[in-house]
Image (cartoon, rainbow, N blue to C red; front, side, top):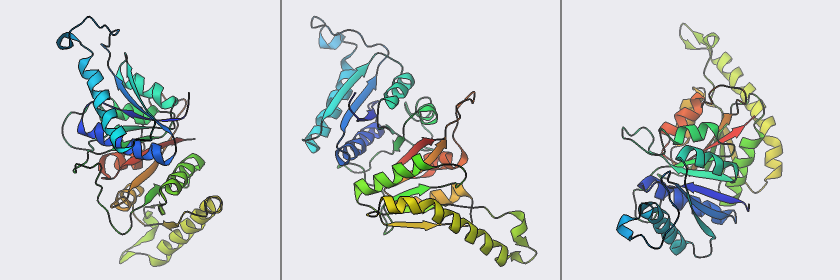
Length: 291
């Protein structure tokens, strides 16, 4: 199968924003856009059934209407509509294994039911073999309107514990494709030893920052050489990694976080940084699986 960006559709405003975002990304990467809707009650097509009795009608309409809008704004983009007779989680996980990335709608922590975020989205994020991008609903009529600041660009969160090549490759490639700067964030909580009766021990805190900056520089050096066109900045704030990431995401065009692949774990899960990003960041969030 040719390389594709797959978007999961459910007819919600969030999934329409996901389709718009996915179309932009597919066009940047010269990939085909696949619009996927899973409908367990899908039946073989029949020309003898009146439209008002066709149980596939709404499923086909979701894909058709989204495809028409995308093609109107991206006339040169190859777009494939796909209806599958399967439950959404299984269909999305299978599609993820066949895609460069999969894009889903997200409602963050809004206290309402969502077809994707909740019963569907989180298991897909936790199990998918490829990057999953979660996109909030647009507030404008012309596509996603993220909050923008002078910072902008792509933000990637690094733990610096263990390999992170897949995460950095996705972040650098995305920043290069968009012609945007890349901001690398590594947050560290202060240990108990850093505190004194009068507050934070400056010497201990400064030593922690210097160690983190040295390790961060060593990690980024080969990627800076590989992507010289990407303007890279890095920071090591002395706050919890989750808080550092959410702060850095303000005004960003995309936040990239990693997810360790627990091959032998009974139930895949997201770490605290990915959880914070998915639920609290207002920009699109890409969760990248890596060893």
